[in-house]
Image 1 (cartoon, rainbow, N blue to C red):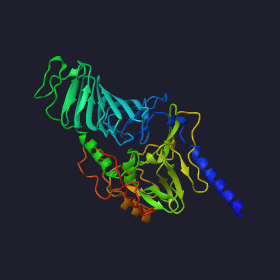
Image 2 (image 1 turned 90 degrees about the horizontal axis):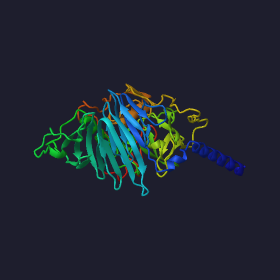
Image 3 (image 1 turned 120 degrees about the vertical axis):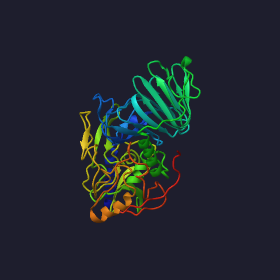
Image 4 (image 1 turned 180 degrees about the horizontal axis):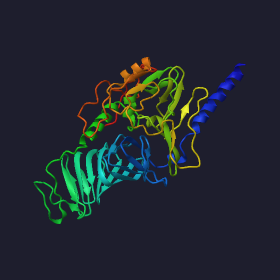
Length: 445
């Protein structure tokens, strides 16, 4: 009797593992191609994934692959996170092309982007050996060291301002150095540095550089600064090999030591009956097929690394790990009886919505159990753990968070209260209450 029962259990476990394996990413994931994250979408943002469908409406957590184009419209803003936590932010009416997202034979990351038009902010952490190139208006910036800068480009002029690091801008006529706290303008039509730029050592002949005496503030600088502050604050003590998505995990959820399962992360406001694949979309990519795109604001790292685990009495939690293999979005170990994940689409390349789909744009006024953070803008409230406790007791609670940080938002108004740390040896409060584990070794800034 015991032997038969053991065999039944083993068959059940094997079936569960096979079910999870059905949704692993195709073999293309093992190549030198890289995937980065569309980590913030506000207003109208569009993406061309080389799927043959042209530009489509973009939404949070879409993978960005080599050859992808992103563009923002009149009211649109977007952020892209790279693996080490470096970020690219696009203001309205901006178009950028991800020409190269690859790896060298030595495993170093190579990123080559082209700013077609508009304005972008680059915050490059600059891990050793990684390369980043941004081309614009016939000029090119190549980074091998940490840097933070703003670039604007139009049909007639271009401008670059450095907030951190000294930049070398390589053009057709000369190489221009932009020191920290300074900016330089370029005449696109003439392919040389603007003769009207203000400088104590300006030289207008022979395309010589004319560097502005001081950096001038832009209305979108506040948005950029507040986004960096958010990432810096909530990505503290991230000891995973990756930086993208870490800040959102720590803002929207907590880690708990669950007996028999170890350290699991769970979003706040999970509630009974919630599962991690309730809301999202299938997005098709050439050479890769369909990838799962989570609608949840924290929905990146848990869908591509480690495993989702269903623990009785705790619910669904994410088990960190598996950093050497990038999954295709739906992977889990164990599930409640009768659970059915979203079905992989066939016979089409159109985006397929599941549940509420990939687009959640309106901030909530009341947070309900089972919402798992949907509709709560990042950085809009300082202590979601406290709100999570209220929702666990009452089933719902009013939400009084500020609007997400923006171009005209007051400084410093969005980060009160406690914040999370990640991947540590402590234990959280468990279940719906949600504590924060402590850890070590964050990535540098």
